[in-house]
Image 1 (cartoon, rainbow, N blue to C red):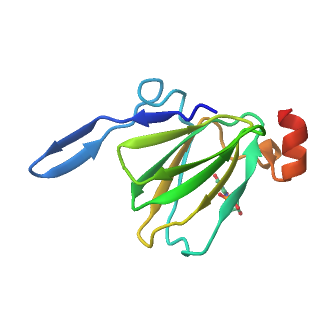
Image 2 (image 1 turned 135 degrees about the vertical axis):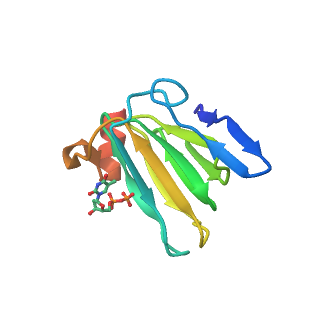
Length: 131
Ligand code: TYD
């Protein structure tokens, strides 16, 4: 499975660092929604779903966490610990997130508004649909 990690340009100087996100430029879609997770308990594993249509880019803007990505054929673990790196999550990709650091702020950009009917929350169903 090809893992797409976008290297975001970091504008740094003596004042600190800045990263800009632009739709259809360094983010490969129109951004319709942004959400972020924080104060995630250390032992929590979340996600456990895939999407039928939705595309996303996940960025650990602070701290770190791990992603398990599963395309129904292969499972790959990815560590996100760099605010200048965006993980592209295509549709029909099962994801689980875990090992959140105390300070982790995980920001997700999405190309659609929240729509529960786009979720596949049952792993067996995901395997059937992805196949
Ligand atoms: P949930 O889907 O359980 O998160 P995850 O799959 O990443 O573990 O989402 C938690 C709650 O937040 C759930 O009640 C749905 C709600 N939610 C929204 O209202 N809008 C959103 O964009 C997202 C991602 C979740």
